[in-house]
Length: 185
Image (cartoon, rainbow, N blue to C red):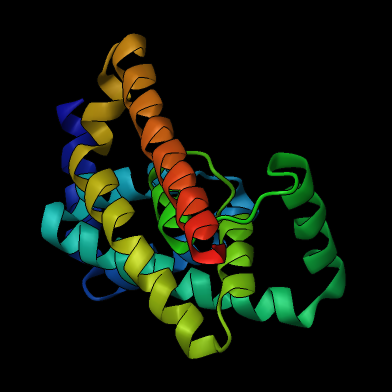
């Protein structure tokens, strides 16, 4: 294992400025390779350390959000597939920006679907990018810092963390529902 780590460090050292750029590019082609966000962010923490890995992951994820915006607006079939997926996963439910941000932290939640939700909630590309970037800070930091540890936790710890996030998601949903009912009165 130490030999593999040494080989990776040598590769990054020799790649120079190209290593961070290639890592950001990996974030952009990640969906084509069917890699989960968490895996790429874990790799960033391993390869570049916490600070640089988190920063590079944030940049890559933010660029991917922009690419999502362009793809959803340019390709009606892609938009239709996301709308269909939205109806299957969350029928008759409108998520709030806070809920989308929490879902961004959950591993294996469809990145483009969450981008689609944000697009429906915002009026301009600038507003979309603002909320999207804001919602990507936590996953970039969390996955980079704790991704390796999370993947090594026992299954019951991982399930507990998922249930905690689901409870927070549900709480925000109920709080928003009550708020809307009060606003209607």
